[in-house]
Amino acid sequence: MKTIIKWLSGIFIVIVIMTALAYMALAVYYHDHFVFGTWARGHYITGLSVSQAAELLNEEYETADLTVKDKEGKKYEINAEDIGVKADFTASLQTAFDRQNVVSWIVNTISGKELTMVPEITYDEDALEKAVSLWPLFDLKEEDRTIEIVNVAYEGYQLIDTMDDVPVYDEILKQVDIAVRSGVGELDLENFDSCYKDLELTDKMESVKKTYEKISKLQDTGIVYKFGSQEIEFDGSFISDAIVTEEQLEDMSSQKTRKSEPGSGEFISGGEEVSFPKSYSIENGFIVDYAGNLILSESALYESMQELCGQYDTVGAARSFISNDGDTIKVNGGTYGNKIDNDKEFEYLISSILSGTKETHEPFYEQLAAEQGTDDIGDTYVEISIDDQHLYYYKDGELVLDCDIVTGNVKLGRDTPTGVYYVYGKAKNRYLRGRGYVSFVKFWMPVYKGVGIHDASWRDEFGGDIYTDSGSHGCINLPSDKAEELYGYVEVGTPVVIY
Image (cartoon, rainbow, N blue to C red; front, side):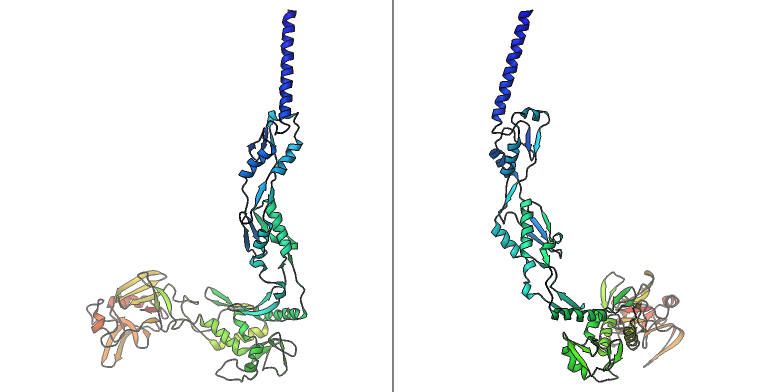
């Protein structure tokens, strides 16, 4: 029994000695290699030297391009390859290696150890500086920066101030450098106050700013014109041309009152209606009175008002119209549409500017269409196609009636006029008289001078090419039953589209 115990003890001692020797051998081995269970960036680097591990990590690392955004939201790209960005994990691996305990490597066999690796980023600094210096952000040099008032088409006077938020090249380059070395993909310069600065203003620049404050108040009239569903503000895009400038001085100062030219010889200054002031001065290119008030030309205001309202004066205007066939066609001329009363409208505009009225305003009209705005025909109308010799009547967008017709005699030069008209009257049992004819009709719907829509009991056939040599004197002939039906539908003012 004792012999067996001695034998077993001997074996145990041998095992312990062998294990200890193996453990110490591995400890010696790990003196130049990463210990058992070591991971880095998803790679198992046990048994690798620092240089071997660095070579592995360096090869698989993907360098990131950098997107830089400035305060205005414009973006600039730094391509990693263009500036020779390289990543090296040697230093980070060496630090981790120096901290490992080669004797306690056995601990890593339980759960392993993931190393936190931060690469050392290097790049061609000259290439980066060149790339950054070429950004449009730095195109405007400090010595060229200023404050000025410019008249922008369709917007009015605007203040161009390039003295604020001036990009600081050295600071921006510094932040770009940090971003590249950090490996981030985006950099927002707005997050760094040091990347921008404001330049000191001269007395002249301060004066320009004060002049613009006056202009801005004039351009902000607060008057909004409503044309149907469309609303247009009478702002700087219209009023800027009325602010008297140094260039206009000679013409404006000698302007005389003429009845044929609304607003001529009249001006607005300091909230009052005046003639051109005898005492004035020039302030940054603009004429001001003795009190420093800018001067508005009423004649120019009239032209601006006409420019605005003229877009919605639709009588005789060319229109896009979707025909019964679904085609979009152009229809020119006619008597139908909206016609704005320019005289009343001008009185309103001047009164509102003088009183400082701010409101949404519907213009005064001499003639009203079914709808206001540029799309004024609406969904209820009569459509007449001369080529198809057909009439359609739509009520609220739905086709209610259609029939063949006969229009003006082409051979005799009595063509039915094209354009957009309207039913300007209704009558029953009328005699239509003209040179060489008298015709009795039961249902008469005139649309333009002596041209109208009516029944033609003397005709047996309608449609086709009858109109070319046996057409009417210009009127639109309908079968009696259809004329009676249409007469019951249409009202005075109903649009009639003839093409």
